[in-house]
Image 1 (cartoon, rainbow, N blue to C red):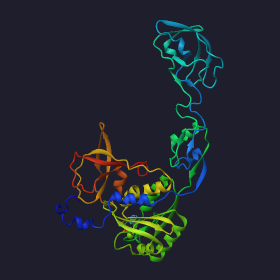
Image 2 (cartoon, rainbow, N blue to C red):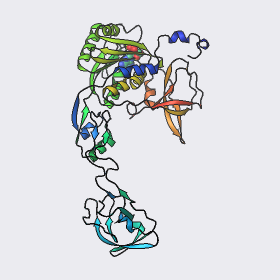
Image 3 (tube, protein in one colour):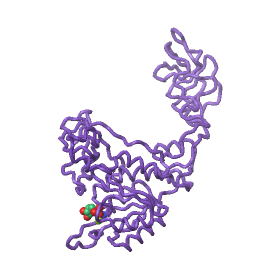
Image 4 (tube, rainbow, N blue to C red):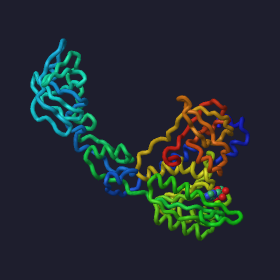
Length: 420
Ligand code: AMP
Ligand code: MG
């Protein structure tokens, strides 16, 4: 707070709260990439993280070839002024090269991608010549060396093409295939155990009694984890019961690299979770200066990394996206990218008290080239429908107060895990 005197009561309320940036950095710094790799056929490696540097075994393209359909000529034959006639001595097709040599006064008909014949170093586009039987006439105005693709100009033999930690996606599959590489070493899959806590929760398919609700967090978590490509261990709903919670944490830590739970970390009602974690692990209970998602538990249970997300459905998605995701990506061995933040104009006036970083659910659209956002109505942390309507968070810095309509705001688009 720049001027605490201006916001009486605010400092007291914020005492002991961790900033969003600090919490995110602490989590990222704490986790380490897993060890262990497997060797996979390249298509099976899509969505996995490369666990080796890939060095090119060859030049791409492997030989000089034509960038155009036309005629391969000797550069020194090009007329400086007037025109000149060349004799056609053969044809070079893609996959069926011409094997002879081109000498002064000669040329070879050549197709795009076909190997340049020996002696020729220049291609004249077919539209730029006049053909007469087995001769062509070319004008001045051409440049020696034009329209030729050189060996290794995309990738040179011995060059590092992909580095360890690269997520393998469509471009990487094609790149690996272009080098003739059929298999790669990737990190083993991360094992993530997850469960919901709460006596009020019922699984889909069950009948709700008075005071009960369906467990949705295990489904949003499933959706995001599944998309991320980790090995999932769904441990169901664990009641607010000491023995059950203890057993769940014990089992989870013996099976998984990471344990993610929802609920039971807010003040007052988290006693069993807290007691168990004090016994089995080293876990900090944080209060983060952010909205939604203030409480978060983070640390280790036995050897597993533990992330205890809040119970409210929107808080679960926001804290997963903002904290769990970078941690999981790092553990998967990925090179971390900073959060992608764009600027957009808000159509709405946004009410906000200074003190916490706010992540409003919003829809960003392209308004004649100007990114523009509208918030998705009620912003309380139980309004899960807002997450479904939204395609981004509007991130308002902690110090910010109310934001007027027409102002520029930071926008974090949901990339991949929350949208499709
Ligand atoms: P808690 O952090 O356990 O106090 O939960 C906070 C709020 O989130 C309460 O209204 C819970 O009923 C709700 N909640 C907790 N877990 C879930 C869940 N798995 N699915 C849906 N709502 C939940
Ligand atoms: Mg609860």
